[in-house]
Length: 368
Ligand code: ADP
Image (cartoon, rainbow, N blue to C red; front, side):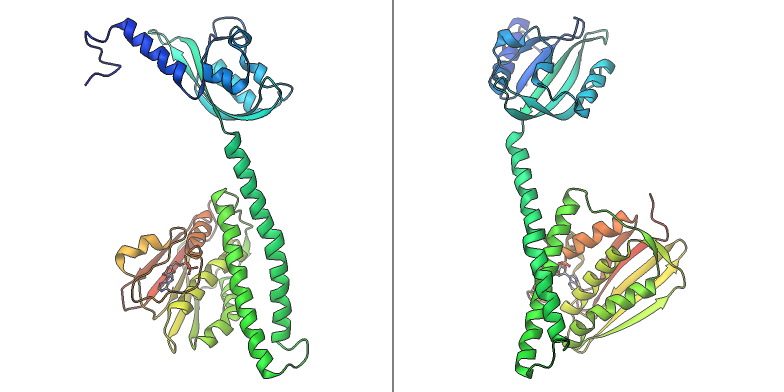
């Protein structure tokens, strides 16, 4: 097969040039070639898509430096990056705020690369521009949506849950037993909904790399005790006994709220998938410079082929031996991210029919 690098007789250099030129002329990305050997690195070629994108005519483009696209918005740190990449003769990909001839903004995903001659000297730069304004706009809408979920959904929902909690525990006075039963159901569902909203918000933070840790010295016993107390009702309702085994006197440096969240996920899953009357053990021990946490249940277990998939986003198993359960399928993915942000590892030991042990290991001091 003929390639650009292996011309044969039918591939004359004239033809080749013509094809290359036509390809660049037809490209849907704005393409410019500049000449850094001339004063101010002017554009020496721009394809029609570049004119279309920017609204400038060929005469207004050729012979000028690309900076006419910046308008007055010239204090972008990305512009300084482009400048140094050109000065150092290297390639770069960045996103700039640029302006069309009519003054309207467009987000320019710009990729520049040096073009070398046979001696390796930089003779030109090629710049490929991609208008990502629509993508930016949709990112902004998605961000607004998450902020709406956070404020307009989560805030009133927390207040509903808190009020139901107060009524349920009797702080608002005695209520008839029939009403109490309904309040308890409403409370459990408000909690489920809140957990789902929190998972969605954490998922968004995870995707954008904004899930930050707030580390401090934490005592495993205190965390486990607090988790067990918050899940005691859930365990009692499922008729499951939860046993705590703390075999460490050491503390560790971690984000206690996030570790609490991981343990709640693992123990709540264990409760969800275990048969009534069974036991769950929550064990912690220190080994060398790390802390090992393990949640062992007597549930259906997990097949070898499914183990890896469990920790993927939005993944729930649908094998015949696990009944459909409520949940977002995000809990383990979020837990994995939290553990890995601490420099730790998470996994599961399990065999079908023999229960599961979900474990995670954290360094006593997280790696920075
Ligand atoms: P969800 O919020 O849906 O429970 P997770 O990411 O926490 O999502 O869990 C993903 C899936 O892993 C669950 O839907 C279930 O199929 C499986 N799973 C998790 N924990 C256990 C367990 N202890 N025993 C059996 N299956 C489990």
